[in-house]
Length: 168
Image 1 (tube, rainbow, N blue to C red):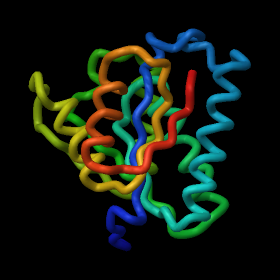
Image 2: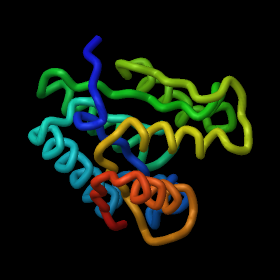
Image 3: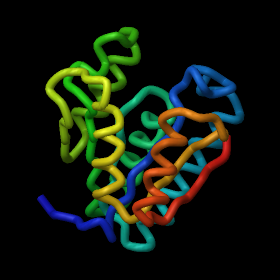
């Protein structure tokens, strides 16, 4: 497997579906537009040399990102989608359809990095730090609210990453 350094790597942060104005309605025109933006940014980053795309595999925007990168991988060569998994059992409290989507995406990831073997209060932050430390770029789907996405953007700023914000 090819190894890619931070210069060739980007990570993603974005809100879970509970914070999105359309919730889980992925047919909503705003969701469709966001997915198009994510695809366009992934393609643009590819054109600038990015080959490794790191995703935290949460519900909502992370899933959109993973799917966009997998579509990119089908069209272009050398794409690695890495799942940065905060803890084993990340999906155990999700609904059946959400767990199935997660399993399908995980099965197609070229690399899976597990940060903790069980849930701990800091495992999500550890996942976010890992993603930022491995990357030169951060793509953020963000609505301005505080929370994990906000904290990941602040972390990326402190680490000097190039940030592409997609406003929701």
